[in-house]
Amino acid sequence: MRVGVLTGGGDCPGLNAVIRAIVRKGVQEYGYDFVGFRDGWRGPLENDTVRLDIPAVRGILPRGGTILGSSRTNPLKHENGIRRIKENLAKQEVEALIAIGGEDTLGVAARLSDEYGVPCVGVPKTIDNDLSGTDYTFGFDTAVGIATEAIDRLHTTAESHMRVLVCEVMGRHAGWIAIHSGLAGGANVILIPEQRFDVDRVCAWVTSRFKASYAPIVVVAEGAMPKDGDMVLKDESLDSFGHVRLSGVGEWLAKEIEKRTGKEARTTVLGHIQRGGTPSAFDRWLATRFGLHAIEAVRDGDFGKMVALRGTDVVRVPIADATAKLKTVDPKLYEEVGVFFG
Ligand code: F6P
Image (cartoon, rainbow, N blue to C red; front, top):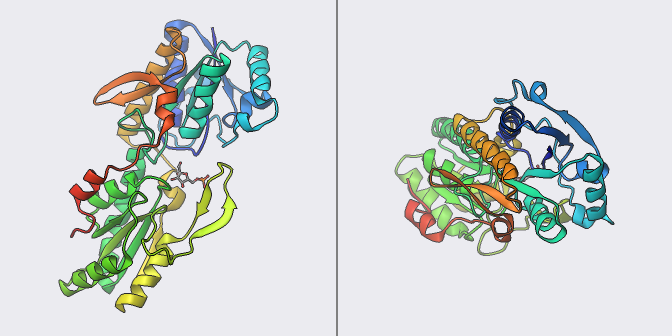
């Protein structure tokens, strides 16, 4: 059997570990061979392939990024996209396709599988941890580790200058990275996209922290928005996903804090640092297990399914269910850790 593999959407640490596990188990246990498609769905759409065998995956376990490349190409938005994909898979004699991606990449895999008879298995990835159906996605732990280290470092410089330091982390639609790294790093305020924040409350807390001789750290997810709506953060452009681009909540908030409290404030935007570099041990472990289970699903002919972590078990869930709705931070959890805490 010949199996195609692609990685789509924003990259994340652990992608290479999944690819390696799929290929090693597929070749050594099942005698399969593989073809890699370049740059997500662009690969099968344009018949752009890369060699994928044991030598190709040697030494890639600890490497960030993806040896297959990635893109946000959505074949459903291309004329004759489905037909072209089917033709190219036939040309490559591919009998099963493993798509490793987030909501959008897997959304396409679900439709190809369920509506167009293309045999797909999905592997969930995103640093944002906002995919339903799985307790965790790989990449998230690495991103949280990077953000936590940054927050630790911000504490010492904030204290030296008695300044407010605002740390903007990734998370357009969900505050998982913010809430985990903010809690782990002992942030005083954590702001997430799921709940609009009150700038005056943030400022009151900042002031109270200074009174107690602490320099406050504010962690804000890039998609967090204030209640009063007096912030113009949306630019008119849409990204290739069709999402409105959000920019600058961290900068904006630091300026507001300075204006309203009279305290000096600075912003650090962590950006793509959270997505780059070597995966944590947990992410390597999770990504490898996902890869092993994905190729098992192919062997079982269990298509239209995504591998997922439930507790400590890896299970299979319908891709369509996992991509129907984003997994956002439960208000109860947000309340439990305390919106403002010191
Ligand atoms: O992978 C998800 C994500 O990291 C979001 O948190 C972030 O908003 C987005 O990707 C950035 O995407 P891009 O690299 O395409 O700008």
